[in-house]
Every structure is written in structure tokens, then in C-alpha cells.
Image 1 (cartoon, rainbow, N blue to C red):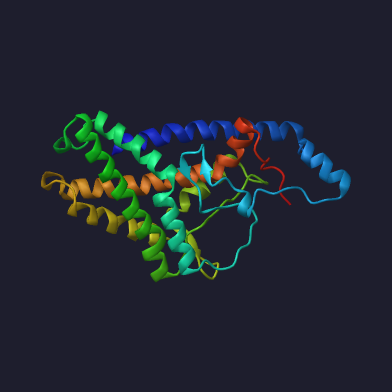
Image 2 (image 1 turned 45 degrees about the horizontal axis):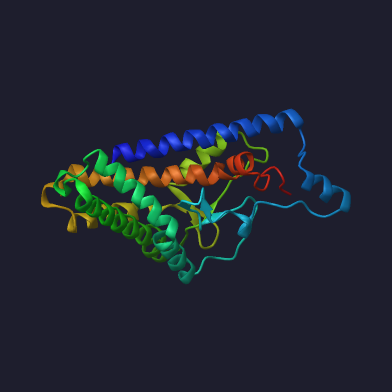
Length: 255
């Protein structure tokens, strides 16, 4: 599990470096130099923002991104139905299966659970356990606990306007313990902290008996929280990396 977290950290470092490069380019030119910004300025139209529905729903076509909200986007309170829908999307969208397939391969390669053995049958065991782990956590973290505590499960990006990269990184990491309530106030992120802990305990029901130790449960809890923190970082910096790599919407073009 720790090696899985290391895999995500390496990936984030790449995204963060791309974002930093973009920030340096922004500082050197001062104002947005994209053709879209020039056209908007000449016509008097408002520049395109990275808010709301314009956010990518899948990062690199693999990582689910259904809860990301663009900079300065204001939305009505999140309903119970919306929390259930986003938890389901994060669990059953095709991109989720791709991610779990990759994680299962990494876990088998490192022999994370020796009782599963190797070969095709072993990979199948790793895959369905990984899939159940992720689905269970999604529903506890994004639907069940937030519904009880009335928390908004969407990620509201700080954005790059007037913000340094390290400040944005700190903000993203803090979302592990701080979130918004349905009324818009900043509150303790019980969905993440409590929900991930419940999921770690529930997983003992379907893992082999030798794996049901306190140490393994705490390790899974820490890994789940660490992976979620990683995705908060990716959500914060993905618009910058997407603009550099794939000429997506320029995150500098905000009101």
C-alpha cells in the first residue's frame, strides 16, 4: 500500500513541476497572451473561465474528476442525490476500473497480499479487492458520512490567480481535514477522516484472516487518506498541466 502511495506522489511531482513552469511563464509575460483572451478583450466579451462544467471529468482519461469545481465558481448547496451520484460516478465510471486495474497490477508485482498468490487468478483477487476497497471508501467518504454531517463533497480549487504554487499546494493538502458545509462554511472534514477510517475497518470483512491486524488496518487508513490528499493536489494543479500538455483552457483567464 505504501508503494501505491509512492506511485501517486511521483505522478503529482510531474504535475506540480509543469504547474510551476506555467507560473514562471505567467510571471514573465504578465498578462494572458492566449488568442482567446485577445479576442475577448477586443470584443468586450468576458474571458472563458475554468469554472463549473468546463472542468475535465477525467484527468488523463484515467482519474475520475467529477467533484472538481473551477476557481470562483458559486454553486447551490449539494443535495443528497448529488452526493450519491458523484460517489457512484467515482466508483463505476470506466476510468475508475482502469485505475483499479493499474493498482492491482502494482500490488501483485510487490506481493502486497501473499495469500492472493500470483498468476491470473491472483491478479483477479487483487483486482476485485482493490475495486471493492475503492467503491466502499467512495460511498463512506463522499456520500454516507457527508450526508449525515451535511458536508459539501466538491473540491473548490484555490486557482492560480494571485496565488503561489506552494500556497495552492498547502490549500489542497488542507482539504483532507477541512471542507465546506452545505451552508458554505469551512468545517472539519468528517467525511474524509471518519469515512476513510470506517472503510479501513470494513475491509477486514473480506481480506484473509492474516491481514486483519491493527497495523494493516491503520496502514490502509493512512494510505486511503494519503491517496485522497494526492488527488486534491492533482485537482488543484491539473488545469495548469492540462494547458501546457494538451492546450486546454488557460487557468490564467479568470475574472
